[in-house]
Amino acid sequence: MSDWPLWEVFVRAKGGLSHRHVGSVHAPDREMALNHARDTYTRRLEGVSLWVVKSSDIVASDPDQSGPTFEPAADKVYRHPTFYEIPDEVKHI
Amino acid sequence: MYTTELDKQKQPPEGANVTAIDGAEDPALVEAFEARVAADEFIEPKDWMPEAYRKTLVRQISQHAHSEIVGMLPEGNWITRAPSLRRKAILLAKVQDEGGHGLYLYCAAETLGTSREEMIEALHSGKAKYSTIFNYPTLTWADIAAIGWLVDGAAIMNQVPLQRASYGPYARAMVRVCKEESFHQRQGYEAMLVLANGTPEQKRMAQDAINRWWWPSLMMFGPPDDQSPNTERSMRWRIKRETNDELRQKFVDITVPQAEFAGLTVPDPDLSWNEAKGGYDFGEIDWEEFYAVVRGEGPVAKERMKARRDAWEDGAWVREAADAHEAKKAARKVA
Image (cartoon, rainbow over all chains, first blue to last red; front, top):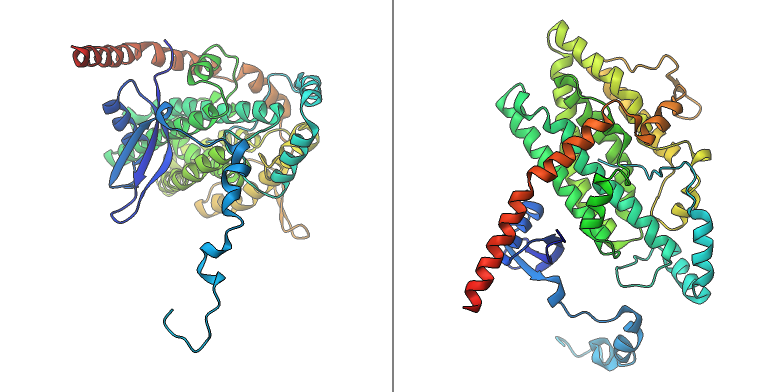
């Protein structure tokens, strides 16, 4: 028998926080993926909410292309507030 | 629990292989990789990595995973015989954790391009190794206490530095494992204390357990540094952060006072405090025994593998049922 599909597991640690990737599980279907995720990743109250997503459904950027992908953001310092010179006398800005 | 990286042969024939692979790799990529690792950057699954790094990690992580899975067996044997409901609940939780640790680690290994199926198959066919420690028998309840205290204690010593391993998924798995492992060691030591402070017979049982588990625990750190051919490269790659002998020394230094507190004797006549080095000197390890167990000649090696294969085969119907259930639901959706 070959492996069941792989699911990525995301846990929300508590209300107010985003779900965060914690690992993966194999399971034949979504319900069982959720059950396995609970048993594997939340044995100690690690979370209040779980997501499972089929790994094959995730689209990822290519690390070999991370230069060209993210480089255009590098030379746009004017997108940061510290780029702008405001006289010291001016407050609350 | 943790296994030191063990090869079936003392010196893997891979050396030649590695050079050949290295030769085929782009030197600029190799250089960039080495620089990233040297700068303590993390390597992630889709990043370029030398084939030898990938292979070594697959072996190391999968052996570690197998050790967690096989590690459930000696303790699982005692669940029905735990001396109280409290101890039974604790042991169940611990064994479940070990299963979880195996799963974290299999997942980490799978990100390197191997499959769960291949790894399980390698374990069941005897091709893959797991920690030598699990091929010793658990004769009494005190052995369960000793395993938690000494075996998990040694495992923690090994695993804590691996939280900074260069391979991201491995390091993250180690963070989870270490968080959970501390409970394993503490419950073991507590159980040991209860026996050590109990009736003379209980105390004898505790002493007998440390007598049998002390040396195999020291062996868990693997062969001495001068006989550990891969150490240098693994340290450079940050998939091993401290040498076997360094970790072994640390373990002895923190564990001996714990034994003394419990009123138990460490079974080593050569053990003595060395003021100058600020650590204990200890006796020679029987490396012949170690290599024999690595070769699969451990006292209960065959029983362990049989129990593991039986569990897999006896559980096949559950996996088949899950498949059938999924197929039925999928068919219903189409209709």
